Length: 501
Image: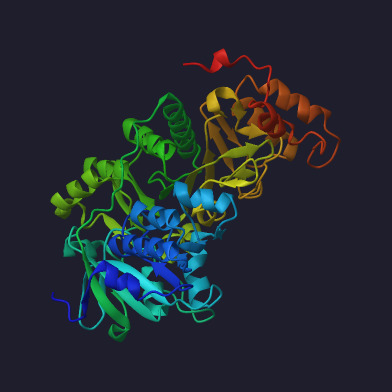
């Protein structure tokens, strides 16, 4: 398909975007994110700043983006406002120093917030596509994100036509958008692989101001092989789910699985595939990583619904080279569908996500270090955690060589409350919190999940705290955190040799 729209260089496209514009981009992680236009926009911002002129945009995306978007724009000082999630080191520094306004959002909320006008008028959308037709059919690439909504809401659209991705990538897409409330029907997904929409996103062709050529890969990187800690966490989760099946609480055919991002979640997937007793299953999630492609290829995973093919470049090339093997086993959806609470609840999704810290009652912090420094954001964990059939949070029991315990008396920031968190897992063990009163929850978490070096402190805190439905000593609840900030260790007299491999 040829393009009937004006052909622009990346620099020409960047010149169209004014200071203060709200810009929405395609993609979800580096997958499907635009590359050459944001990089040119960063270059333009630097040049204007050197001349003493203001230039910053408000940036709204699906989740994080690639280095040529978030990193480049942050390093150029070209962003004043950013939502809803990020993994960029330069952007993180700006957010934690107050130099940009960063809005951490549930990812399933973004499309509705955008179409409802709550985030302001969208001036431009920059969307990566394998192709676009004269009547405005946009063939999105590896990350759908919020692109369908941004194409609808933006006043003007720039298409980055990326020839690295074959047009066949659209065969994986299932684009289905929701009208504004209250005029919504139930989302007709009864199985993770159900297809209910189109293979393209639609845009009014009159909005398209130009097409920019690109041939850059997503730049995704593979995760490291599971270490001993991650592998132990994976084994605990695997055994727990098998026990739940044996008890009849999970059906013999299993349930769809949602998996967060990172080495721990990859290790959990690996533990499932390596256990001969574990059934084959389907995935309903937001991000599909290298490990899942391998599991689909081996038949351990029957198929996956996702928002993003967040793959290493090598694994993505493998998928393209063997496309026929995967075409009917992967569905790419917009994130308001991939992360939709109603679908997750109805399908009975088992949610597995990672935590930064967990307190003794089961509150989970997944976004901020020591209550103030944002890491990446909430992401989609809340979309699934509050609506899952089983909600599992995982983390190592200690960090920074044992100087930090991830199990603490009180979380310094709460993203997920005790009311929704059901299972906590570290390499030490697993605490099933269902049906337990607060003190029983606390003892289960300390005894099964905390590192042995921190258990005496945590038990002493619990037993000496003033009586209440939740027992807390408000004079000491952040003592471990304050110790670390003052001395570099939560328990300054702790023998750190015990944590050495």
